[in-house]
Length: 175
Image: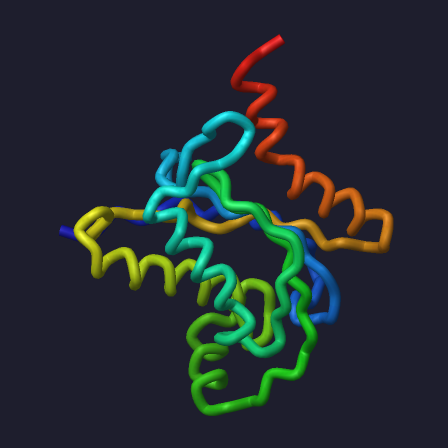
């Protein structure tokens, strides 16, 4: 019996844009089925679960794993993560990168896609060693991204990221 094939998703990436270019990118990464695995809202703050703490640590480790990535504002929410990543294209063309690029042409070395791929994989590997999430899916397929175009856009996105827990708190308590 053949395994079922997943339907081909329409890409939300900007056609023709090289995601290895220098710049800032705003990303949102959601948990599988939007389960609230990463924490919960207590008052107007997010209290991270043990899974959320691991996710935050893996996010903070991105620059150590991918030297062309630098972190800006980010927040781990109960069922997703918002973050700004700066990409500076200076990735050496190592044998490992050549192999990865050949196998994953949509996530080439130094690209935003490769950075997110490494992050999600690292979280999954760490969590699969723990009984709390063993062999269960953590992440939804793909991620949302927005190319930050100028200083005004960067200011707006940073504000959105930092205000996100407060907005969730206001939504929870209602009018």
